[in-house]
Amino acid sequence: MGHGFGGCLQSFTILLLALSMPCSHSLRIKNRIKTNSAVFLSPKFELGPGSVENKYYHDIDFPIGHIALKRLDAEVVDEAGSPIPLHETYLHHWVVERYRIRKDVLDVEHDATQKLNQSNFMFVRNNGVCQGNYLGQYYGLGSETRKTATFIPDPYGIETGNPAEIPDGFEERWMLNVHAIDTRGAVDRLGCTECKCDLYNVTKDEFGHPLSPDYTGGLYCCYDQTQCKVKEGFQSARRSLYLRYTVEWADWSDFFLPVQIYIFDVTDTWTGLNSAEHHCKIEYEVAESCKTTTGVMSNECIDTRRNKARIPAGGYVVYGVAHQHTGGIGSTLYGEDGRVICSSIPIYGKGEEAGNEEGYIVGMTTCYPQPGSVKILDGETLILESNYSSSQPHTGVMGLFYILVAEKLPNPTVSMHSPL
Ligand SMILES: *[C@@H]1O[C@H](CO)[C@@H](O)[C@H](O)[C@H]1NC(C)=O
Ligand SMILES: *[C@@H]1O[C@H](CO)[C@@H](O)[C@H](O)[C@H]1NC(C)=O
Ligand SMILES: *[C@@H]1O[C@H](CO)[C@@H](O)[C@H](O)[C@H]1NC(C)=O
Image 1 (tube, rainbow, N blue to C red):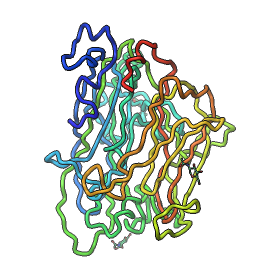
Image 2: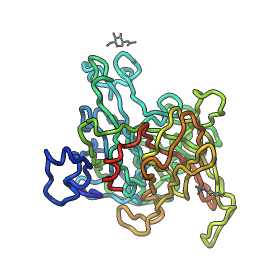
Image 3: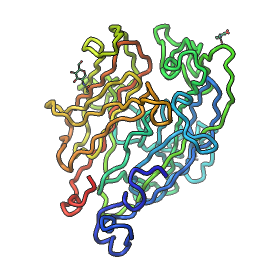
């Protein structure tokens, strides 16, 4: 099943449960809470050379009940279950969002107006920090998904499905957005993945609004059912694909400490004056600032963006990871005093096969600080830095930083057995 650790080994350290639920493989296993793991397929989507799918699937298969989410990994596969490499199907992003819906409301998928009616539908966003529902997801990755660790160490978990928080008559469900671009036979593979408007022959957005002439690429040009330019005469079959996702979770118990999810965006224009006024634009452009023929990066060939955002509530950082696109060379989140909270660096592929595609970001390094070692204060202003190579122009790039923060430290007998 492609587990990083496999079966019981992923589970948790707690002697008490070990006595009642022994796991027979090794001594180490005895001390862990059992987690569940399941593999799901998204609804099917179909792609032909150059085509784009950007769909929102409501009420997806997902563990329900009062649980601790521990891990969510994903990849694009075909009908035979074979992984599809990024140079064929570029996974622009997938995002998992949580919502609550009145039990008798049947169809939000085809009746979007239902979603506007707050007495029927409630989006449950993460803990911040962008405006409205922007970047409100629980999970979200792109091309880096195959080699980016998402597990949450003991004894932490993302708490969902707490019945005490779900209003009467409502139930909690999950939505999945998958944005995939088929670049088989593309005239300009990178250009298609960067959603360059001329390659899509797009001058108006999805809703028919004309795009400004200086908007040269990004999500407004590669929306659902758009078509990127393919080489003259190139033929290849349309095929059915799925996002296959593996979720690991455990029933919620006192053992777990909940984490808060924050996503920071380097395009956020928050000024520091009004804590509520965020404006995350999600994407930005990198202008070419120099030509390198040697591929050696000099300082002039780095585009550095920096911004600030205040975290509403502090705590101990449990996990951190950045999200960047091709051209990205690293991102760091700093505290107000300049200390490093987490640095996350892209891992580029070196070959052909799925998970190691040359020229693509196939993973991001993650941070798993020693318990208690990285603390953020309540209301602290954090600084986010995102670096890209500017030896060629890029459109539609991102600089996001995702952190999980716990209010409390684990009790020492638990952390002693932590697998980290
Ligand atoms: C919202 O939903 C409630 C409950 O189904 C319904 O009574 C109300 O008329 C709806 N409001 C709008 C504006 O559609
Ligand atoms: C680009 O779109 C225009 C209309 O918006 C259409 O007339 C033209 O044929 C398209 N070009 C290509 C190459 O598809
Ligand atoms: C970003 O680049 C600048 C140089 O422009 C460098 O000082 C900084 O350390 C880099 N940060 C990251 C996160 O790579």
